[in-house]
Image 1 (cartoon, one colour):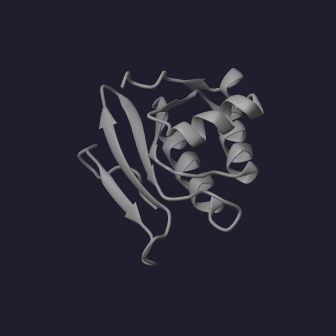
Image 2 (cartoon, rainbow, N blue to C red; image 1 turned 60 degrees about the vertical axis):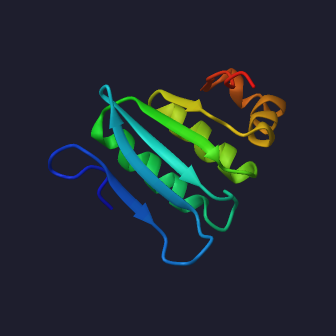
Length: 119
């Protein structure tokens, strides 16, 4: 899986199954932004792991946009913590349900979670 094309712009990696977990990658001011769409659970967390690992291998800071993730389970929390152990990860645009899981589990004490926009 390639995170960046040769020009350093963006590449979309999408599963072929409708409703499957998806990831779009973009470069913004030297940061890799992974935009995740769909539920993250034990059945597909290997995709999140692979996307995070590939993004971190590029060497840029990684921002994880979880604005289109309605649910994540403990396997996703483990993947996030493992990624944070390798290099800095920042979470932005987390849905209220995901933000609550990050807060209750204490993951927000290890990984920077940007505040929700007002509204």
